[in-house]
Image (cartoon, rainbow, N blue to C red; front, side, top):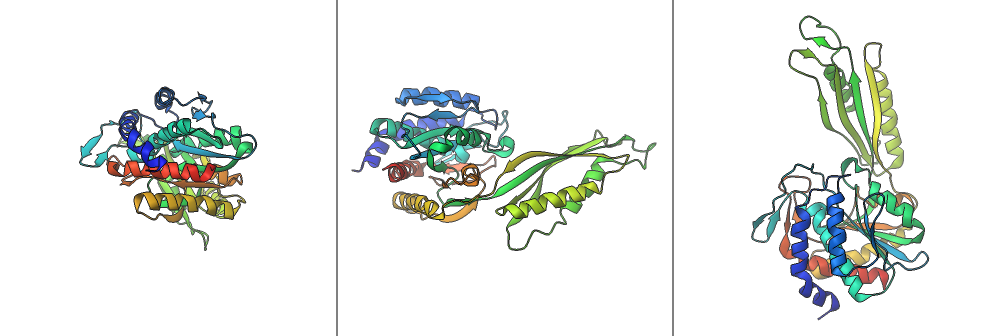
Length: 371
């Protein structure tokens, strides 16, 4: 029996118990402190040394770091897209466990914790581990930004465990995120009829933004994620706001998106309408990265997942923590380790029978990158 198989057989129950406990701790972006505290205590109980929580709330292990620039950074994010008050109850139907956030990215975080335990028992150097914060939504990748600021000069590469085993992400999709706010005088819907309505102004602006023609030859998208405003049915709305984003794998295309947005909104500015545009998030596109190095990392991930699960992942691009190292020229690859679905929905689920194979694949990836 291989080392990864022996370790997995011995620790599967521990892994599943850790997954259950971690899943039921709320962790919205910028509110991961309870999960981080749990992970710190749990990892210490596992015998993992040299742990700390950094200024961004990341749980970091530097016990196995090598001198110089010969380290691989292994990460999985603690946060989910769900607010603090979301009920977190695991529903079990055979091998199917359902709970908000269980697959994105809690199960991969639990697997990374066991990978640290494996490394503590194995010994050696060449790896830095982190359970990072702020990957989702308006977290703006703050956790990974902190890790790259702290460890960037010591890194050869970054591997992020995120989402499911079906794809290995070798490139990144950048994004620009904004809050668009409109303020007007407002008033009574009958007596003051004819005054500008903030909701109507914002709606017209959004309609024009949806007339944008994406640059040809790129995969560029745009979306209004939320809209809010007004007071009641008989009130001319004084305020309204929306969250809006552009996404593209092409940095030049994103600059064109930004220019179109500013030009469009400028057309709505007048003395009785106050409009504010605030950038609330920016995920950078890919910089100049050694393509051969990315291919080498991806080949190890694909091979490990296929050999342990029987599933050969496709290669693709995504918006993940890897955006930060890739934008800085550091080779980075993201992959999931288990079967699941429904990410970002209340019906999110994983196939728990695939978790042991996911752990074996994670160990093979680790061994393939630090050997």
